[in-house]
Image (cartoon, rainbow, N blue to C red; front, side, top):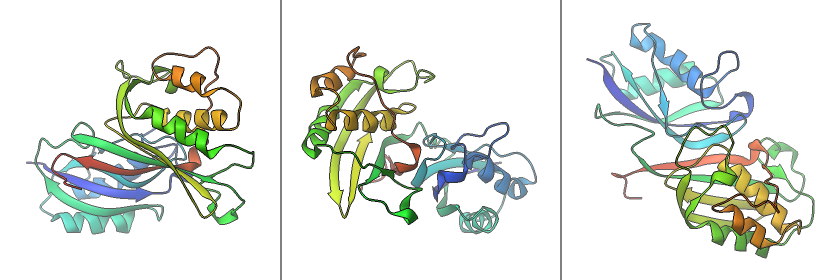
Length: 249
């Protein structure tokens, strides 16, 4: 009988087309599935992630599950993966879980962080959006406060988003400033394709004075004809954490 495993991993998404397997380009999912194949009697393995990060997006604590036909303990599976995976993907945790555990559907909340640099830092260029134009931090914070709660994010997700229900419940939405960086943190029960990057980009448009804050507020539930949605660059976004019901913190 196959055994189900849950892993927590981190990755630098710079050199990948995103989480999801593609026909030609490298993906995080495909790298893990190929690394697991020898542990599954050379049979294909399907790896299901808690979230499908886009091309160039990073993860600090992504969660995934898969089934293996093996007698190996979870710790050995973890070591085997890390010995095979490229240096920009690393498995921090591996444990055997119940057969009905689902990394995506069992997740109760997800947290993303978006990092903005306010001055050039060459060694950080793959992990931040460099912003050099003037803006008002107070306007950013006011926009972030509007996002908390239950909203329809139809106007703030990719047109290709498959989900019919585009209502998400946002638990936390805040901006912080630290050592030449702005960090936006958002926690919600679910996210739509492109949602965080569109939120960040659109908030920055308000903060730089291109539109009134009322135009941003109108985006939360319907499409505002007075405001064009802007998508922030991928490299500043990090899937920070995924939480499940059994986890207290």
